[in-house]
Length: 167
Ligand SMILES: NC(=O)c1ccc[n+]([C@@H]2O[C@H](COP(=O)([O-])OP(=O)(O)OC[C@H]3O[C@@H](n4cnc5c(N)ncnc54)[C@H](OP(=O)(O)O)[C@@H]3O)[C@@H](O)[C@H]2O)c1
Image (tube, rainbow, N blue to C red):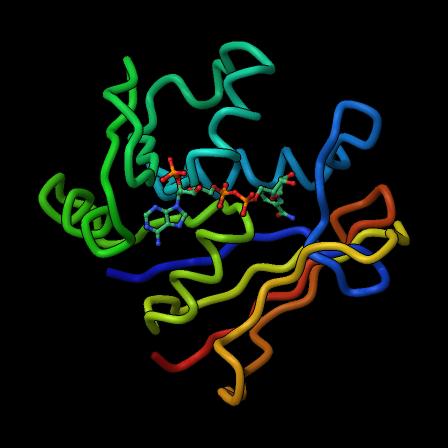
């Protein structure tokens, strides 16, 4: 299973927070929708999923397999709820997928990175500077070198880089 970690970063390197006052750039969110359409699925942490759900139904997500990772969430209508990253990948494998899109948030991205479950990073760099915030990282002391595969100007000041990393 090829796992692609998709994330938006601020110009000062934070893992961007999205709030009602500072929503994601439309160019970045449209790119997420494109990636999700191609994958047919996405995996999301319980908190980020609640943020998506609060915005109301998104027709772009209607036909996707959405996998919510939570240690204790009850079943949620219309999505699959699993209790770990490996369970999320097993579920998608059983449903016939060969690739999975990992949409965040910070805790879930870092859990996948810590477990060596990521093959590709798609990073959207935005012209926004934040105060001290979130970041994606490997466990302390770990170091990994990736390979730059692509750089794309998404418009609206958003530049996307794509890296492969070895598991
Ligand atoms: N920059 C970006 O691209 C991007 C993308 C998405 C979100 N975000 C931002 O990220 C922030 C939310 O991130 P977050 O870290 O608070 O939340 P999150 O990762 O979306 O969700 C955290 C929850 O997911 C579950 N979870 C995470 N890792 C798990 C694991 N290994 N095993 C089992 N369950 C696990 C747990 O749910 P339970 O508590 O139910 O057990 C945990 O409390 C927001 O500020 C949002 O705007 C940014």
